[in-house]
Image (tube, rainbow, N blue to C red; front, side, top):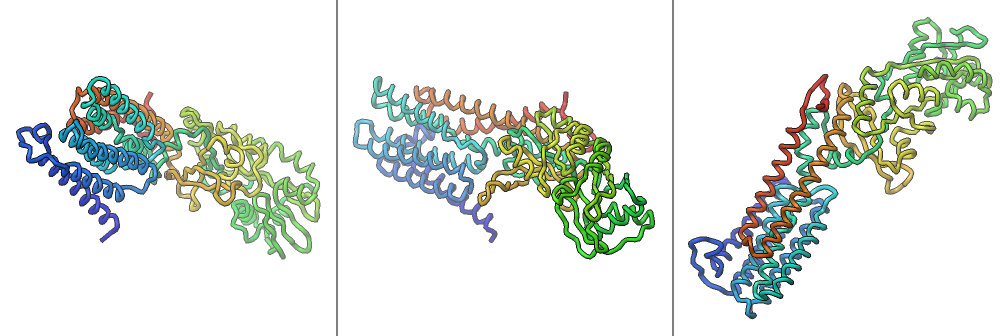
Length: 526
């Protein structure tokens, strides 16, 4: 039998057993007329606290099969500890003047608390940054305060008032609200064109201030076109033949563009004797006994080759957003090559939409500073300063914007989809980022990511408002319970009301957002 099925069966068995033992305890309790209208108490003995203790134990075993998230364990552990305190008080008060009825009520409080916590974990699996410990502390302090006040008025009612106050104000659902909000907005994210939305994506996107966009994500494809072949001394055909031969055997888009133009010009290519690629900079090849360098000015400076004349010519090409490569033969620059790709038509609109949602969009490109600035101005983005040769967009974002927790938008390796990622320092190397995939969309849905930011902000607002409202309601009901204005039996009703309120918040939040699908992109309503 599959593991998941076994876990469900275990949970059903332990929860059912806990509920059955609780009902049995109610049947033999002195509180039967109050708990079951029309009932008759069968007996009043220590068996009621014992049965309630068994019910709590089975509920605790059910929680052990309910979730792997450590966030949920905190509130569940606190709930179990509070139940144990109530059970201990129930046993210790038996021989006192408080009586059997009050002792049974404390035991019932413990069992109800554990059973409701099991139901809360089952209905809303805990996940997220909120663990409910603060709300549990407030509930505990409130019950202690109520108990202390009753000690001055009627000591016999003090433990009962404290137990009812604790039971009504306990935050059973506090650590599941984020998961509930994620579930509500997951369908809206799918409507916006997103898929594979990871847990915690909405929280990370909502808190992000910056997004780094890889240049490949704003290009219509990997194809580059050679637009300029500028030879200083020789014929342009000779310059093209030398550069294309040096790039022979490479799969880089630059090499494809050079070979394609050489084929169009019917230029014969030679196979180099040796090729030494320089990732992010260019290539160094041995061709016909001479060293040929095709690359950026950084590569030429690294090899101590004077590129002053080529740099002066390249400025005008780089100002148009073109990628400019220098070609040197035998330690002397002999020409300049200009290449460009086709920008996506919707890239600029997506950049504006990201800004409208409160994100600062950055463009990562391994080109020269002039080219980066020109492309960024065309798209309305901010250029990432001083990229290092061969580094990825994630590495550049980690190096320059680490404190801002930016997002990174790149193309997948097969270039069929966009990938949105977050990162954190690697455990083994703090200088290397460890990326996490947040969401994926097709290459036709770059507008899905501004929509994701808007959805994330709405989802966060839903979670915050719902948490505050439920916390306020629980405190108010806890005070009423502490004043003995609400009975113990109101606790399950309050639990159901909390679920209904969450559903109402979700329905209002989603209905308040007009969704218009235009070209497969979700546009926020005005």
